[in-house]
Length: 504
Image 1 (cartoon, rainbow, N blue to C red):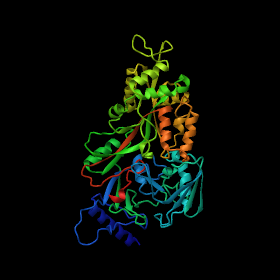
Image 2 (image 1 turned 120 degrees about the vertical axis):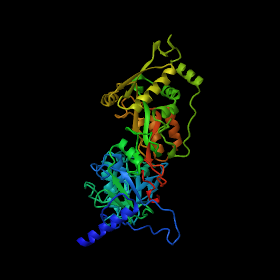
Image 3 (image 1 turned 60 degrees about the vertical axis):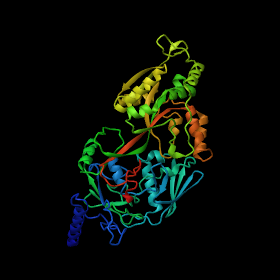
């Protein structure tokens, strides 16, 4: 046996040297993984050299358990080891992976899983494994928002999983992106998975999983490289020690390196919170505020183009019939403001309300340069319209406390909208958004009808634009950076930056 292990390790090292020059590898962790060339494109005809390996950054201290890893790089690397019921494509449409069919019956979501799914230890992926994984994911911060309305998960047979939801939700299929692991292994340092790749014994090499129902065509090896923090990773791509790097642009990133990039649409909604209840601000005034804001300028100047303007929390990818509504013309806005009591101005040009200058405080987190820049743009736009705005920039802890206490007039915030369009926190008072969020029972009732499939999404989109419980500004974007001579056609999504690695 020792001789066989030495022989296998020697062959793997030779394959690595020939394929990518990335250094010696390690023996595959289990059966079903292969270093053999792809069987496609046989015959003697010459074909262009295909990309056979890729080097990606990861943090060896963080681990590859998808439920416990903290960093984004490790989360996406772990995604290669674990399959999901569905994957969301570049426009957010769910595409089946382990799921074979997803249907709905009232508050039930019924998932038939494929019968050829196999874990890397050779055992079949069953409905019991999926149910176990879903319940584990529901208790994990990264996956909990999408599964928050799940009351119960059951497995009536080996290939059927039933999700009982708190209310009918025709968008719940978008929530089925949690990692599926073998039952009772989620607490292990490395749960047993059934993904596109398997981990080699050395811990820093992923090897193509030939048990996967659609094995990768060309990529056989994924090398995990400790490339340091995000700024260092950009340099590592430039110097050729790794092939690509991802950032959601929350932290520092050097965008001046001249690397090729792919933008990734995120679910992070930047919005203007309004303390409507304490200040008595009606929907018409919130809509007027929205009309004064130049979202294109905010995206261009504060977020350097890595965002998309949003006048509604409903992203266009949810439905082709969601269409923007015309913002009121300036003269219409003036008539509207006059009817609301804001038609008069003082000698300095500031708007008056009941014969007093109407001053609003705009709260912003001082720890974020992008937020500070965006807040200044918003302040200037509202002041140009005659509303005096006092910018209050405070550290995050004070910022969060003041929102929770309702100690704000306006604040610049960001929230992640779950993929299943769970908008409850945006259209009803929520502790995270502050107690001043407007209450609108009609809007809430319409939301539930849309989720149940009783109304069109366009009706909810239009109602949100008219009610503006919060004022949407933009959806942020992340970027995958890679060398300009990197040959793969990368399709990256928020759930999986390696969405199409099987076709690289």
